[in-house]
Image (cartoon, rainbow, N blue to C red; front, side, top):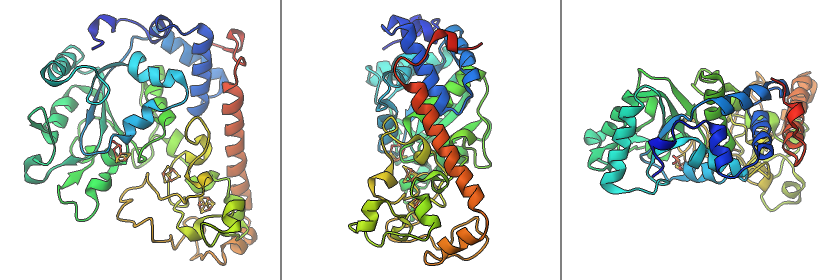
Length: 374
Ligand code: FSX
Ligand code: SF4
Ligand code: F3S
């Protein structure tokens, strides 16, 4: 396993050692800075941080989950995103990605925690069962409950990756037979950042880590403990089908002409109006698509209690923010007549501007050293 010998490297040194050029590095930074919502003028700060800062050790625990969060993390199409976790973060322990196993792996983890006490980031994927002393999930002879407490004790911060560790997820769905709870129900003396989604978007997870590396602080959080830069808007606010919603044009069935034409999926159960995530602006798989663009309504996978909300059969009855009981049949007229079109137009325009920015900044050959201002 890659271990302490390489810990003194900076991120940049490690990137170069892996065979990437300076141009690749700058391209990656500008691409990520766009996702992080940073102004172009701040790209220099990210470059400088990665050039000068030592890699931060990361311990990554898995509890009750499907490992989709790890899958999402390493599936980013940007080659350096995958390397960020495997190479550029000094990843000392993760059940699914590390080469070591069994006793040596557990020992390596203990050693890393000891050496980096108070400095490492703890990533938690999955919920923690608390019923019957946590007997329903154990790793290396310890309950997930005890593993979490031991690993959290020396962490500088904890990142709850995924809806399971953020809210409880599918494990906590009624009747929650194992008493599954999210991380922040158990850890009260450390900053716990929720990065929900089942799974979360790869660039969101990387962006949270990069923010910490660049600024040495945690990102601004909303009242639910989610980074505002990624969870500040509802899927609905930046959805490309929003114009159809506003016009009261809805697809009535999945195989209809309207669905294919891009009509709003609200009547088919879309939970975009309630769900806070960046899917519609950042999209998935390097900006290729997101559930709604593939013809499926948002099922609110980033929300608390999303399984108990019965997203596959229940339609959202009241769309918040309009101040009225709105039905799908009247909402278009109401929105158009209530002069909130300006807000909508602004949200949609901001979305297009962001997409354009990301696209232009990540275009091949577009990033030059002279464009990076300190
Ligand atoms: Fe949960 Fe992550 Fe859903 Fe799966 O591990 S957020 S079940 S995608 O993978 O925790
Ligand atoms: Fe998009 Fe769903 Fe909102 Fe319709 S209801 S505009 S499909 S997020
Ligand atoms: Fe999840 Fe909805 Fe995004 S289902 S992936 S939050 S569009």
